[in-house]
Length: 433
Image: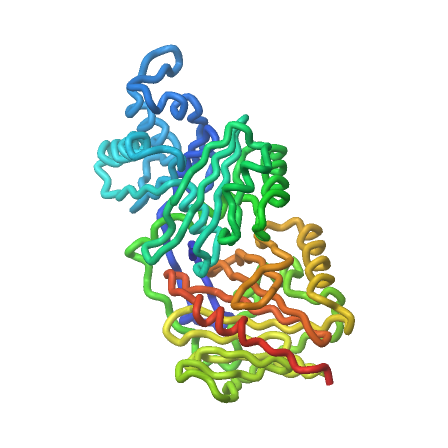
């Protein structure tokens, strides 16, 4: 799921600028109502009284619908946006969710505004904003005091849906948890407002399930990427093909460069910047793709995507390369770093995990030391750069070279799934010269 993005090249003009506007997300969770990630209001009493016609507020009875409308008005303010997306508790049915939706619409009607109101179960927005477009099955677990809600979320051509919900009154029983998560689950996302409960739930899922990716939900991602794309958003622009140099390295992998994510376990050599626009060398491949030689790496990429690369370094590697679609802003990013000759995927994953922990930043999440993707074992993680859509990184190690392939979908939801799987699955690394 792409988000509110503003990407700009280093050119003086703004021909490469892509802006995508999204509706603010109204997040109803853990006794709080937050809009757009701003400080919200406490609505624990309203949530507890959702099945009643009235609620006691400040010692006086109040209609439940009016009370929700007041809460919305307090957090949204007088200037209503073009659209609102409500993330309501996943365990709520249509009647409960309808009360909250009607409360928002009451605020819109009173302001005589044209704001449209959308709504979705919160677990659906969690899956959509935390996972790559190729993911199909996940579990979203919501921790509460003495209760654990486990939602199985599946994806089809129409998007993510809640396939099943189990409410566990004993959230510490590994046998019960293990029965709910089979080997088709690609990721487990755990949410909560209590740090100790959250950590305990993550450990429980790590120990009791076969899923390799277990991560905490980041509420900021829901606000950033969960809203509906507004119709006023302009279409994406292709990269400026007249530029002498490639797209801004900082704009493409801000998070990875800033926290040292796409780096070697033991860095050797110097990254050199070039500006050559090489044409991929063509070998036997489907008509829509070609095999490109990128320094010591060979991989399959879309035939019509534009390539921009750094110069070849002393080891024969090319530190940084992008393949960019000409009709939108999808990209395949290839980063090559020299590592020790005895480095393995396990040692690189350990080093990478330690560096992420030391960085303390929030641009990288969902780190997994072993992920099965495109029929091969890779290290994987998700990067949320300062601009542009989230990037899913897949890391491979061989012959003293660490190769990181980043897959960035378009900011208007254009999928990079097929190109990403073809690229990662076809990577071969030549021996060190």
